[in-house]
Length: 231
Image (cartoon, rainbow, N blue to C red; front, side, top):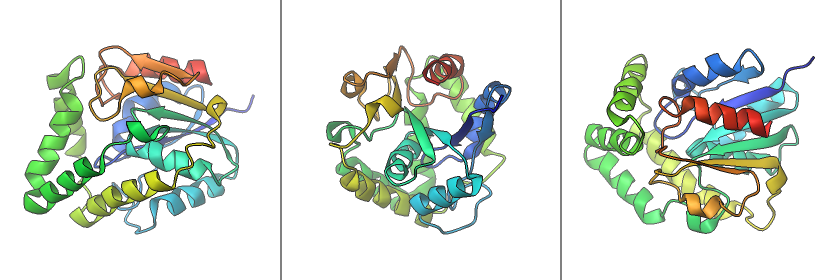
């Protein structure tokens, strides 16, 4: 029997290494792909993220499902509007189905300013914010930092370009033309970046109790069960 192809798309700052646990747990049942976006991990290209994902999927040349976390979900949703190979998307702590749930322009501009002023402090603070509301914040922070020691963070140019791109993509998404039957939204109850209340109107929505922004460690098994259930 042909396996469903799943593309795991990471978010801002981190790369495909964050999906290590997901790959291990999903690969027995599905064909798993986890690319690095341009400028992240082992991908030195300077492609536009939407163009990169569109070409990546075209090279697979088969129907697929995208699991997008945070910023990765925003890219997946935008790409779905024009790529017929994408049959379903699963958005984890993403913010692209409702204008009120999108992270504010002011917050993005503040993060850009922090990166320009003190890059290391900005990265450290962002990781802290991602981990602080998880069921095991200290453990999750240690795990994400350990994984990222194996690689390097993107340059400020890449990170700031992505933040600017977030604002552009959000303004271009057609919020009145969304096929909710093809979308599953998984949101952490404790995620401070996206508002879980805004996904309650979605039929295939799952609110994960006690989950913060990171789904990769202490909440991994519960998120994977929700993904399998939707598929």
